[in-house]
Length: 171
Image (cartoon, rainbow, N blue to C red):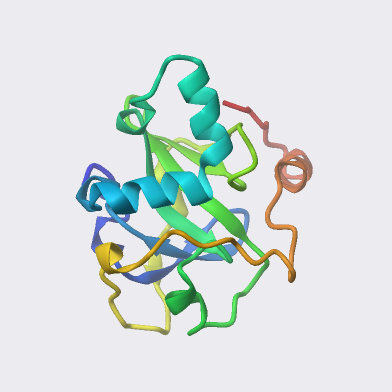
C-alpha cells in the first residue's frame, strides 16, 4: 500500500485528524476485489467518477486512490459498533503523484477538497475497538444514512479552514 501513514490500520476503525477527531475505516483499494472497488466507487464516489469519466479519465483510481471511509460512510457492520465523535461522512483519497490528502464529501459531490500535503497529517491512531475487519468481506453497496447529519460538507470545511487561516482548494 503506497500510503505508509495508514497502512498499519487497514481493516481497522481508526481515529484520524480531519479538522478534529474523525472515525475512519481504512482499506487498501488495490487489494479490494473488482466487485468491491466498483461498489465503493458507485456508492461513495459516483459524482466524482462521472466527472472523471466525462473527462475521458476512466482510470482515475490509479491517480486518486481512495483509502478510508469516514464516520457515517463506514460499512454498517462497523458503524453499528461505535458512537461517532462527530457527524462526518465521505471518503479520503490520496493523490499518488503529489501525496496530497483529498476528501470527497459524498457520492453526490463531484469535487475533491485538498485537505493537506499527505496522509501523515491524519495522525492515525487506534480506536477503542480493536477488531480487524476484512475490507474484502465488507459490502460497500449501501446508502449513507444522512438522517443524523448532513456530513462534513465542503461549505463547512471552507468555513473551518478560513477561520483557521487555511485555504480551500477544490480539485
